[in-house]
Length: 521
Image (cartoon, rainbow, N blue to C red; front, side, top):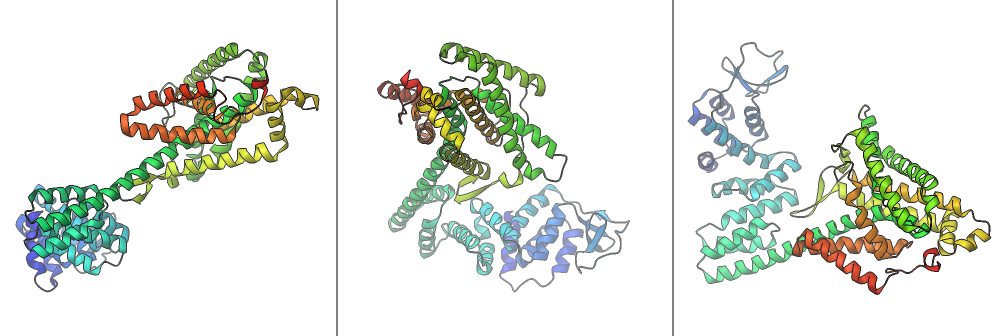
């Protein structure tokens, strides 16, 4: 790379290179040194055509046919010098041999020429790549790209690259300007560079400016870390909210300690897997979640209602028996899934719109999958609020929760409300499984990872309380992530558990107290 850049620098000191055709011929027919010289000339020209030629050479698409140099792609061939399109690919075409030395120089040449690509995203990616790996000899090339760059984001990166390279200049004024320019940087590589500069620089005034720039960068990086922690905390909180929301309804209404709640989450995840496989045979794969969401809800709700009708209904008021029976049911469901789908995890793919992420701050990428799940959790929460507060079923559920006997006296079928409420809570668990399938491994033990956290959210927030569940889920999400950053994941879990135990000792009803059947009995 250094050889190539050195030659390119010499060529940059002259007017724009006019003999691109001769360089292409050298690239095809010359020896290794001639090939490297030709690559340097193409880099110095800085044209889109030069980038296409070098990329074709790297991809093995640059061929020779007699004295002609061709770009061959499939059944089409184009003269690399004149741009003439040939009627057919010549039979006597030969590959251009590139040894390891030339290939190394070729990689550097392509990276430099990407800075002049007509596509903004390509130039942006090239500038990000060079931000931490640019060599001092590349400064003229960076300045040339900077002079013609119109995109503000790419231009800012190029300015940082130029300033990074200028830190090593002999001229004091140039180094001072570079130090001041780097104060606006947002990446850890620049921080390391300034620390190294402070260790080597002898000029106290320059060191003082470098310390100011370093302090500005550290403050900006600290804010980036805070944004990252806040996002991951909200993300974890939204997952806990989805996992615990259904449990809050069933536990709050009927006082049932449902140890099979995690397996209802698992059922929702496997339903998503089945729907995904059905959509793989169609052209609408990216929209499979539109079918998977209602399917996960309905399947989990149906399983929950069957469990309530056949087992749980006969155990009301007997918490120990309910706990043991639902634990047994969870084992049965796990074994049933293992029999149907196998013991190994199954693969659930993200739709295209949930792939990748958005870079909110330099170095802080927010995955689209997490953003969509947060939005989905808010959507489910709003629907639950409307259902409980604006519908007849919600009125019955709230009435039975507050005073079961009085609700029965005014004609409410409490047994039917129990079934519908349990189905509703189970369906929401299925939605949680659908969401978790996009970010977690889908396997028979998926639900076991969330059942304890779900109960902690419900108990901390107050049974039967929607607002308490929201606050508890977000609170536990933030507590876990903040403590993880401080003492690690294991100690964070222990600290959260100890806090909840102490909290429940002082306030058994949770953050939000609700007068209901459990209290009255």
